[in-house]
Image (cartoon, rainbow, N blue to C red; front, top):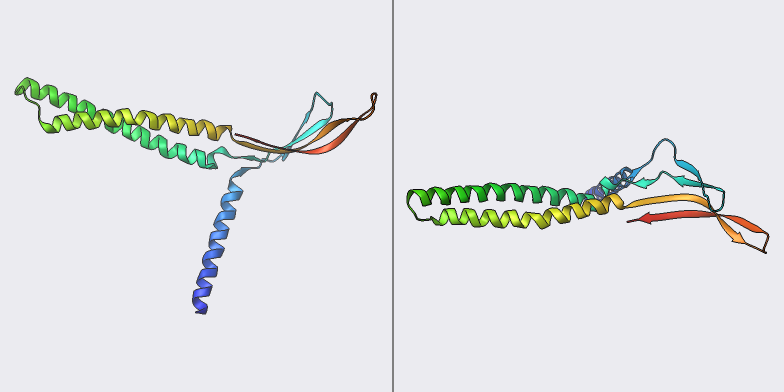
Length: 164
């Protein structure tokens, strides 16, 4: 029984290591961790972190990749099948004047695949745009606090924004 516990503990360690390494690669940290800009409203510096989530590691980007490949594959196979069905029907019409069930099946399947690939590609590019819009920013800023009329106080604050 102790060997089984060792295997379970080893699997848990491997699983935890995989999760941690995936979480670390999801963030893009550059050489300069902060960017300093001047807030025009209050006139004080704002420190923004370069800790932004890489959009290519988001679930939306994964959906985009999968749907894009399915959509373009369906479009390519559907267009080839549709053109093969049209050519077969025209060829049979010229030779015999009749249409075989194979040619009609090729034409039907090709048209269905070609038409069904369009909404798949639209949703794929919707997910791509959604993934590119998602960002995570953390930084320091100062807030303007009005006291009495001529005086204004500035207090430090933590800036955290998620854009999606």
